[in-house]
Length: 108
Image 1 (tube, rainbow, N blue to C red):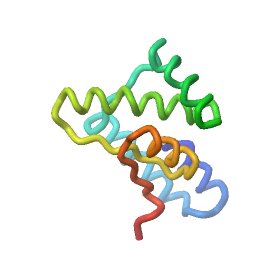
Image 2: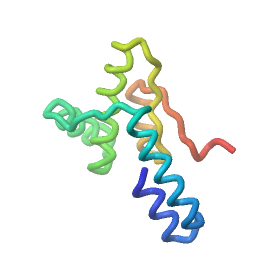
Image 3: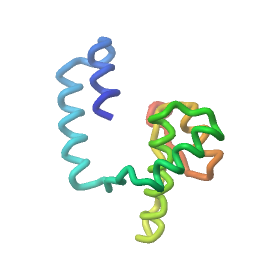
Image 4: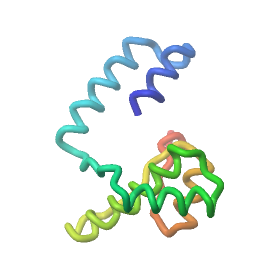
């Protein structure tokens, strides 16, 4: 998230003051609203599998595999889970793998 925001700011697509604010907001949200999924052996194994099945880039496959782990945690907690990404290829792979997907760039 921070990398995507910083890249947009550097490219001139978003004013730097807005980038800084969005990054600060994300860091605060991360502390209270997100669960961190560790990159374990199981996540790496799943990442290799989805990379092979969907020809994903390396980190995209790790993100999708972490999504599987996050979905399991959410289900055990009785919480809904939505995989959020603005990458079309990654979203297509996530949907094919049965995850509910949301692309923030598709909303006005």
